[in-house]
Image (cartoon, rainbow, N blue to C red; front, side, top):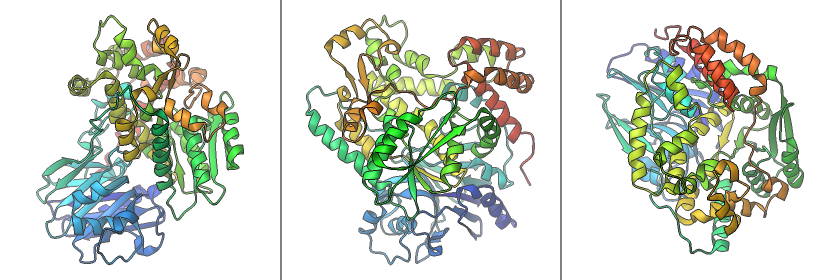
Length: 604
């Protein structure tokens, strides 16, 4: 796991060495173990290394092929690199996955390598003969990759702060992102909170020539097949599912450094912990964090005791939370999306004392319909009077700050809302609504979770791996697991009762979200962990509302993106919302972020 940087310019930059060094220095937290750069004419590639596989110096980056045709900087892991290596006829110098990438690209081509790969990655590849630069991002967007292109300079990196550190780019607040963030808690690709700085879309790569013109190639998308069969062999599918999950987790145990797992006490992290323990020779380290006001320590301990893990409980206080808030924004280069990013970051700092790689449960709910109140929306909608479209109903349930509230309080444009509304409405016309919800969560929602897990771990030089977002496991879930095994009614009588209710009232009472995952978990986990209701990762923001209210009055009174007089209205409205604390917290986040990035000139 690492951080990558680069500049491709049409001008002759006499200080290009200095600029790439500045970029590297800005992301030292992503790779404290080694630093490197390659500069040739109008190209500079930079790298900060966090050594995970083949920790020897010979595997430092940038790296090039034996004939010096291809150069690479790479952030991530290719879990099946040994299998790819067996298909190549190349004289390897290292035992790293990085060298397998450039060897595969040289012998078989970029597209062949991507098709073969199973992993998480952001990769920059430069061909010294054709002078083409490739910027490649993994299928689900697990690893970040940003770029800026003004026609004279193309600057890219794993983090936006490194693009700014190049001294070539002006930081301009993108007020179009305000509405987008308040709705989704993150900015959907390809946009960011910075004007003219973009994300490389997940599942795509950019091919850039010397004129800095870009061709975007989509190499992967969410599967088009979606299993709605009513005739199936449940036990056979369960056995196949067990195999697929074990394979995904075992891949993510490949490392030459110590690893462990997050253990929240929920079924997802508990299952990962169980399978990791069963496949590890050593006692594994597990971590959970909570607050005096609320925590799930007792459930995590049940799993820790069963698998005899070296368990670490971290108790966080309100003061710790406030102290780390603004600091984490400066790592993320964006407003924080969910309140639990801060405890996750604190927990990552703690686990770095013992381990470098951690397995995390992101993606399990999206895989099998864990958010019952939204994933059951197709059923509720089929029983409704159809006053609104299905998409409108989904938006109403999903978006965090309601549209009516945003329209009343913020002064910025809603152009991004219009762009995505138009696109998704067209996509929804092509599919069954049951498939639409799953597709929406994998295409959009999960990206916010991935931004969260990347920055909370990498800010303290820890690599997070997310087995439930293995693309082969995802494809299996879409094609082979019937919908009826994802969200299952407890019985026919329960289904009949649900006809007259909304999912908020019956989810987990009349149905079983993530049914197949829960059924599999009985093989590995205590039933107390499996059968309890979903809690999420609670942070007592509403209990801290008075503190947030004073911060809002102090910070937001002159915010240019709010309508005049909106602060008092915001506080009043937030108090009426069940998520009052988080709504106010999000508005404060925007202004904390803005004052950290846009009140100075980054250019030099």
